[in-house]
Length: 513
Image 1 (cartoon, rainbow, N blue to C red):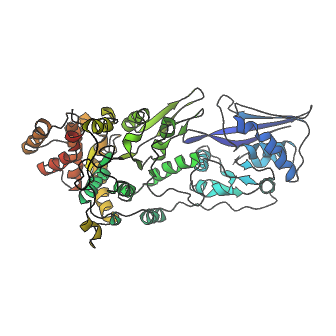
Image 2 (cartoon, rainbow, N blue to C red; image 1 turned 60 degrees about the vertical axis):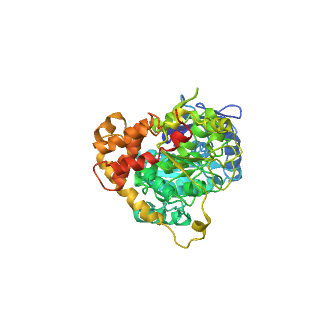
């Protein structure tokens, strides 16, 4: 007898419907799975067999064939355990096949019949809604994230016997309540972040990260060890604009498919902050694998990717970031599949000015030779530096600032100004794919970054006399546009250009061409 169970599989950050066709026919006992399954799916026959028997159901000693359609797409993971088991039971009349017509089923089975969580509950629920499937049977730990999708009845099940009883109308299971709440979404965002109030001194650095956050500019901080670079970087998400609901859903989908979404967090409400170690591989940073999975640049989507000790990263690892920084997405091609993941992140980097870390520090002697310093900073290539708009020095904090009782502004106040500046940019680029000033191209720079004669004179001095490279010209204009937006000024004035030039001062100190 043949039974068909609707299920789903992941492809990138989205899901697609898979029909699990189970045929129980006469012949010698055998259990085969076809439809381009990976090793985890092939091993499901042992889990399914043990779970059915240990749950007190009949397992047929005949030939069983499970087909995963469409059969031309490779499938991975253990989420097909439950639909295959239900298919076997439906084919042997232990589950009513009529109940399977408008239901999608997923779950990993333990040998005792209990159901374990899966990856990608949210994109699977979205696919169910898009295809008009009203009922979704999932492991209990995935139910909350799936219930974010309105219009789908999400039924949490804890065991195979519970799922069978529900399908046979022997047990009632209340659907997981719809959990999306915009007010709670905003409240949780405000409560979870570190605050700029914790940072003593470094007022010019705080201003630099405010400008960077307002325009979506990439930022690099250079300073001696212990000057607070990492501490400041961790607080950048607290001043970024609040996640919109669409951004929250997209960020949640990425964390869901990679399996790092906490079971008690159905919706990501804070900007991601990723800080990979400098020993990371290029596949770990960009993504990869036989079936491509997202890397750190995608996990940082809509948030911050912080690279500490930037020169310590392998050069080939840094170079593969150039395309995601430019395109705001990353395409990974493998023999099995070619997938595109979003990668719209704000790059924040930190580094010491020299191998010992104390070059230009007035309180410590630097023991590095000029060649050692130049070799150290030149580990960062020009093309990568081209994509970093703001460079800021972070000196060691003085004792007077550390011991002072006065504090700066809280993150909430800075965030209000940043959001106001972003609203101006959204209106400016409403009819384009550009999301912030940092992603302006030459056409938009010519249109929106017009400056007066006084500002042009400042730019001429910066390029010709201060030793700034020609590559800094467009970035100065983009940063100046952001500074003007923070001032709610439609025109870029000389004072805005002057401040923007200060954020390129390291060009002449380290990367002068």
